[in-house]
Image (tube, one colour):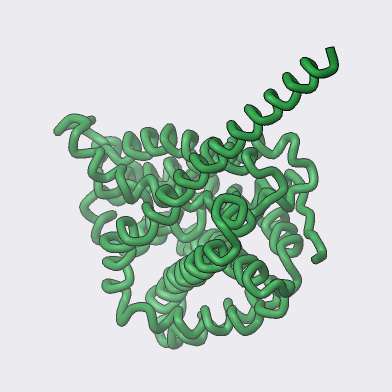
Length: 378
């Protein structure tokens, strides 16, 4: 099958936008209130370790994607079953991300327009991108990422220039100590966005210059994580933790505070653009993972499944929850324990252990053969 190649710059753009996703608008670590920035700093340190884990996992089976690793660790029938499980997981989570964007549009930008309309418009674009392949998605991310970065920087400057920051909102620091923070960090601030970097196991094999990909991945995760930290800090400083926790889209609420000289106001479009780009890239990456799983199962190019599966995702986007409250409760309470921890950490950890044992056995066998050869040769 035709192999797609993406450059290091495109890899950086994809990971950056994947990390940002819809998370940037909803906010991270806000349950920690004034200590949200401390939670994100600790999560960043753990996130780098998780990133290195997935990179190491790829080095144990060079050139193989996640679904080929299943066959390498187990057998093909087992690999087909696991690939189907992960395909369902990836398609389901793409539905959740698109639902975040649909709820944002329906509740703030186009309140009269049904959520199905905005969802369909986005899904049509995604279907075309998925049919064209990963290269087109990577080029799209590469083009628009600088604008998203500049827009977030401008939002920070506007909020600061408009005297919207109240630094008393992040005091007192560690009022109750570190212990309450761990229940916030684990599992949710770990599985999102760092555990989701399992996507590296099926896109890293497409990087044209894999030699430097490790550094690019680490830098991209670091920069995107720091940007998420800055946005959460912006939210808490401008809104206060009480309002931030009550707001469905906290960054959008913070952006609406901008008013400079009664001239520069209503810059909601900046936030909507950032979320739209992050949603497009992140949901497409998840759909791509599901399509690659189907490609492995049926031994047919993923493009055969692109439009049908994108349509299925579009339909289930509006069916997975009755309202936004149910949607958020499902994502925050049940999914981390039932889906994310087993599929992001449990099975990959088992696979790494199996691959390490196989490498150890191969190494010992090779040494024994060389030793026997040298003894007989002498």
